[in-house]
Image (cartoon, rainbow, N blue to C red; front, top):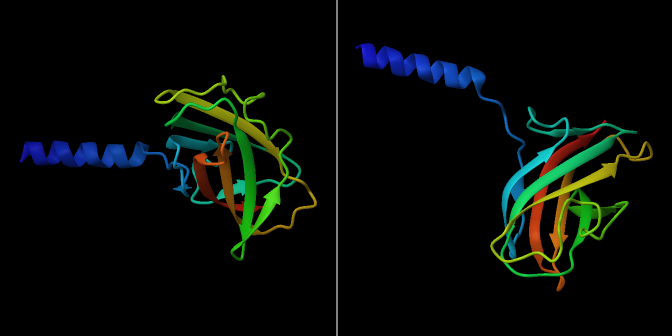
Length: 150
């Protein structure tokens, strides 16, 4: 009986202290393996809130599954099934993103980027699709993050 009570107590404590992770979906990472995704301010929510007039900071830890000397980032907001491009200040992911190019097969990398959330964007729920592509246009990672612009 004591083991059951101890297990129940540990289960309760782990439930209370568990934090919610950012919900995302891998949407076609063929040349890489996503390890983790984080967006500033979205750590404890089922939907990532992007505040109008502020910046969103993204961090993706991934493993490259091939060698590549070039990378390109792209972001789309998918609204009603239609992908609309979000302009990035820097699409060359080898510049100012934490990546040390060339990327090597089997090595882990941490990609970071900041995207300004324009006040001109409508206040709407949006599925954010963030891709990092290698030199031939194949995805090193592709993640979709349920979001809302407020």
